[in-house]
Image 1: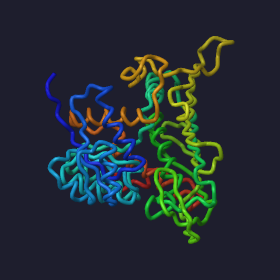
Image 2: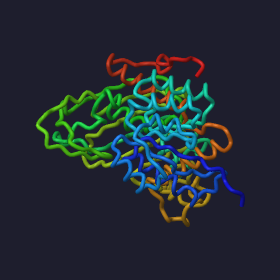
Image 3: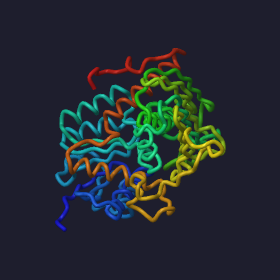
Length: 394
């Protein structure tokens, strides 16, 4: 075997998503034989002690405390952005102008205008780009896509999607960055409904118009002393306003005529990460739940009478997308493998010179829909998604 080209990773941020991404880069060569190989070159964080420890623990060769210095380095090929949403645009545009490939966490940007600027930058500078909607890359979801493309569900009538969490139900839970509009853009809508939107676009097609509602149940929370991932601590008596939605719900008309019902909330008690979708067509239906991510429920209308109903497919066999790279049939994989699968596609794209989907164009489309939902909630009306579009030919 020849020596593979190294893709030297510079990661900006190192907590929840930084851990998930770093693990995926390290494990990717164990399962997939790509023409290029990711190398953990450098990680960035503002807290020098924290980023030094993270570099050692996650296997990065070096660290920086200023992301601008990282982008200036000649030994970095790919910038991986796992920072809060309000920093995505500035970092991604600078990375593109420096000729670096880019992987960016979702949602792509704080605003539609920022997302469009990011897309313009990667196109102008001809760099490879992806946005990290990792749930697309569960083998069961990829298999669902295959069934739909083959026409096994027939004409699609309904999309029913929920993303249900409960991690901020306690009124004493602190005011973390995901609850601040200036940092995150929106609450449950942008943080988790963005995943449902991407899943629906991937499986069914483009959104035509939406109408939605948004609600904030807890109007203020104590200032956080520390936070990480989806946890936080506070002993403060100082309160901060919560200016993003705790929950959102919206109806959708798709361009292909399908109807959609979507719900995203962080106030669904007992639901830790209930990312679920059901699609009904003229010939069949599918159901998928992230909490049972290896399984796809499938119904076909042409099954014989008496045997009709949903069957449960464990998508771990060699002919299920990505699954053949892992373990024997029935040996399930987990959340972390969705990132490995995504980054395998990213490495293939870098090797062959194209930006795999979901890329920054998908990120812009997602942001258009989020913006339309926010507008519809404000005006209490239906909003055409294309009316949000900033550049018509993109």
